[in-house]
Image 1 (tube, rainbow, N blue to C red):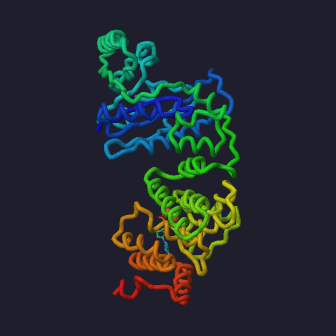
Image 2 (cartoon, rainbow, N blue to C red):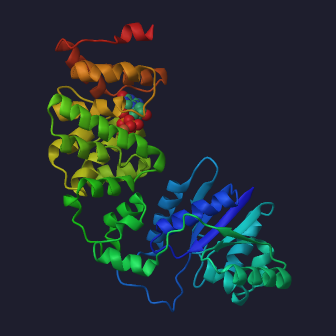
Image 3 (tube, rainbow, N blue to C red):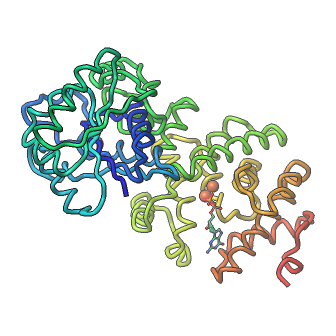
Length: 409
Ligand code: DGI
Ligand code: FE
Ligand code: FE
């Protein structure tokens, strides 16, 4: 296995880091790339409104998750943050070498770093533990690079590879922090990293979270979930907007509800329960043990408490997983957009996508049937609200396009 190691302050991690990491992973055919936020040296004055070490780690984790692909798994490591005081690469690499005795390690570094590598603490240890991958940058540097490469190979037995990075985005973190404090710089950040900065109010970004624009709300909400959920959330937003136009609901409300509907999906059971306790969200016995149902309740709570959403939007999020009897138009739209959105690819989705434009209630009933069938198939208990929602629609004489009986037997 080929493992890359990319250290930096990551204050904040930006598109330049992202491009460098991605290009290096491709050039070196890395199976894994470990991003390592460093301990800021004690003598270095931390800029005002700077992120804490924990926050730099979290932003780096978000970036790593966004970068991960089938070819390369990216991750963030707290190996240096866990260590007291200044971190030396020689120490970190010794530790990683012990952890991965058999793997091929590649230490990535920028131009300036590479040209001064012989002056680092114990370059002999560094070069013994890992190969060196230096980002070639400016034209005209070639001579200095090959001179340094030869020197490192001769004096330390290093194995050095110079990689050119086509996608390198220039820009210093100092300038980026300055831009952020002046309300600019968003375009130099990955969307979810910017969302995290928004949520935490870092680097002087001081937005009122209860008055975010739709793009800001997307960034903030996306920063709470994993990359693999984003296509679903985007799909749900587009489906909900389509249905709002079709059935005469407020399109912006439908978008907001969809953007936030799964924002707490990755909270642990403990986090979900703690949040419900804190904000007085009542749970029945069944719900306490059903993790997949809790994100709807806590998502609604976050929509209200953090993003100041009005009650009717929070309600749509609250009921989006189980449904309930007598739903409002917006509640129905979110409930069924979650199923009918384009990235869901079950066999029944094509039929549902037609139905949802012909007869909204019949589509909701169809969705309830699918949920019941899905959970029965897994021997999960069916939540009473789901059954009540179904009974309500049947009593209203809604078309039952996919009756449970025929589906099940
Ligand atoms: O959050 P999504 O995956 O987009 O969709 P969702 O909010 O509809 O959640 C679906 C999950 O909830 C899925 O894992 C099935 C589960 N679920 C939905 N209704 C019930 C249920 N689980 C149980 N045990 N009982 C239900 O009635
Ligand atoms: Fe959900
Ligand atoms: Fe969803």
